[in-house]
Image 1 (cartoon, rainbow, N blue to C red):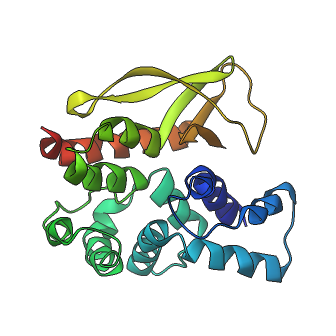
Image 2: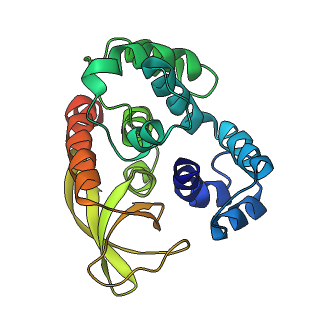
Length: 225
């Protein structure tokens, strides 16, 4: 259930903006409950399956390592980071290529199988890898910055966070934070998606996240030059 809550909290803002999945705002009311019925759990799983891009990654990672796409390790690996990509990355990349055929540009799909083994197939990989194809669209870097999973430190009503700069450099930025799911206070470390604090950041999660993000940037950076 924790993994399903993480996926829901992560998807909240882009779903509300109409960027992914079917509109079902009432499903987020379930996040106010401590426990879900079996029917509610199945409803959330069906909802997540309709988040086509996210589910493509969850399914590929899960199948590569023999786990459910809703497994806690799988969901955390995709959204936050993981330390096992070297073991499963190549197989997951092949599965991902099949999963993404309906939602991604064929030009970039042809390149997925050529990626170095062990590239973190996180949400940040998707945002930056496919974002590079659209770099001629105005403000695409700004959109990629909001769409990526960011790490922030709460300050007042916002957070200082790792902003994307030209050339995929990282610098300090400031963004207003929507705390829709839990209270935040100054000094809290949180993971952000489209300005929403969707998960508090533990020390271990921060280490995985930062290492994975560096690896993703090193892999895709040339595409943005």
